[in-house]
Length: 146
Image (cartoon, rainbow, N blue to C red):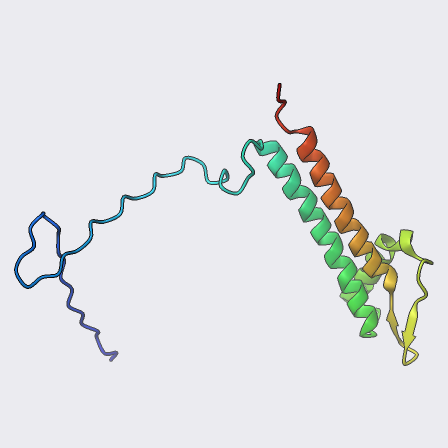
């Protein structure tokens, strides 16, 4: 049987007078007003829900693409066998990094492990491109000022 923790608590209310021997207690802080929307604290002020969702979608897509390219780089560097999940990562990663093939020489280590630098360059370029797209979306959707 687990031991039971017994705790004694005393509630003191501040009525304006302090009973002898008690320490005065500060008045409770006023609670913050309840927010009517939960997403407004995460969005920029003045940004519409559509712009907010578009920005989220762009970052989600780039996050998935970057993850696939990073897995392709890691699997090739670790000389993973071209079967199962790794096979699909190799196929998808090579297609995503295809525009950057030939820029760098591929480094072969121990005759089997390959450091494929186009994957790293593709991650950097796609992330920068996403940042530019997000900035453009926010500029186009910004409220018009007179």
